[in-house]
Image (cartoon, rainbow, N blue to C red; front, top):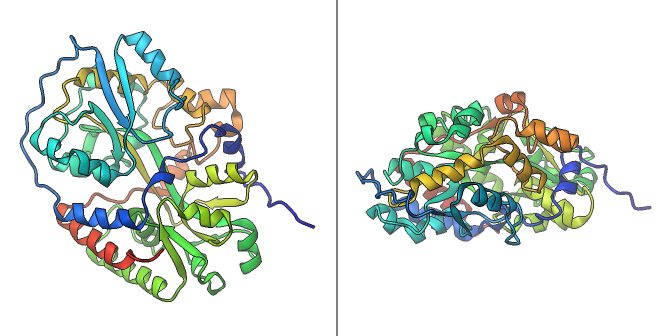
Length: 412
């Protein structure tokens, strides 16, 4: 008699709310190729430049161009209800472009314009913490005007200004969070139970159980895979040393060489979890939501380890060459209204919001969703389980990315 796996309480309520978002924002990241691109770009990371902001013509040219990742907006069939409401309210036309498919490939397309301080074709874009750190350190983005963004000032959750953002942008002078992403331990429930006799992994060391040899897959994103591994070894990823990094990489390399880790992947890893070939490993939590939707049941589970899960944000910045800074700040501020952030969550944008008050509004409409820690981590989870990989210096970015590429390339 076939039995359905027990429903995961963390995931089950997200499934119902995410029916329209079956491909995740992270699910489109490239695999092994992205590692090589990362190493290449890190090797030519620019130094700090002194650039002047473009003349702002927002008052006379009421438009703004926003580049973002897929599946980050309500109504991505083109209806965009919250954007349409903003346009009606503000009189500013928003050209919302789903142009970001990977941090490195996006940067490669606009790096010459960024370096010259010229218009990149976007007035604002949302990129991940480490890439934002690179742009800030290079002098490529404008300082934000908080007096023009009262909703941000009132509703930005403090942890997103200090703990998550403070390391690479103290005081959030140049960037603001759009959505947060959790990397944690994922597992195929039935196969994990069959191989180990346990219901779920409890520690990182559970992934190295000999019973799982050749069944473990991890992410091709260095900061998430090695970040989770460092935390599992008791290392603070917000202040780790070069020795900490290389010692963890040595551990990773030994696990690959021994065959314990079967794959290091980007977009394709979730297929291996769905078909049961990958039984446990390091995953992006949001991807499991989409996978369970496609499978029609809670086949996969996720664990936020006590030792820590990595947490990163995709963040707004305004490049130096943007001629519509005030309009960009207006649309950013609009999305920091709790009722607007709640609409996104209820519409199936199932990533962590940085907007205070949104959780309570979601609870009023959907209590299970609003209390789900994958979308709305509690203060305790933020304080104890979610940590941010510290910003790297250009030298470290080069050194670490090359070392990771050498260790991970060719492992599929």
